[in-house]
Image (cartoon, rainbow, N blue to C red; front, top):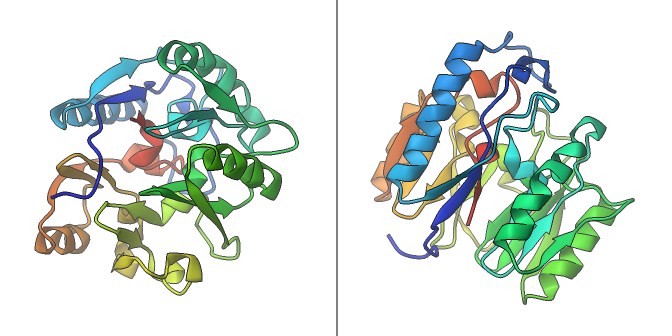
Length: 261
């Protein structure tokens, strides 16, 4: 299917032995570390199967959440921005990834105090970026990011849906598939920021599956959500299902585990 630029690389960082000490808002029990490592390896294999070259960072036990590299940056085909995570315990993750960014991109922008931005709150939809104002991304950070993106002819809009329970990040309930199509949880479908898109609403009891990732000709989806997978197949998408159970216990999803460009 057409409508989304080709991706060629991804930055990944494996979970460390301290993974279970990370932040979480859900009560699904502690992650099984051996299974966590196995699931991450399968995720990396899937990225490679989709044609991506992997830039592998070392595990970082000082930062239990550091495997969720998406929150540390916003990467587009025109620019790269290092964020400033809203959770104080995660701020150091940006310093750990900065050297990699400096080696990959000619110009790297940054979000400065008092702004905060988590990459998981930013949904790139073509040349437009939807930014969620949240507990992790404040308005000051959103405005800084808007100004940076505007330099590269990107437009932005803000959505404030902090009252929706369970929606830690925007990408916990939104994914862009290209072709002007957004995957959404039902609670977001009424928001004006999503008007004008072709909406694919995820069944209520399968909402975790909304955090899916289109990589070239394949949509990576969490395993165990057959109705959503059927919806994608009916629209002509090829899917690859991955077990994400241990990352779900720590508020993580498919998009969180890589920075794709």
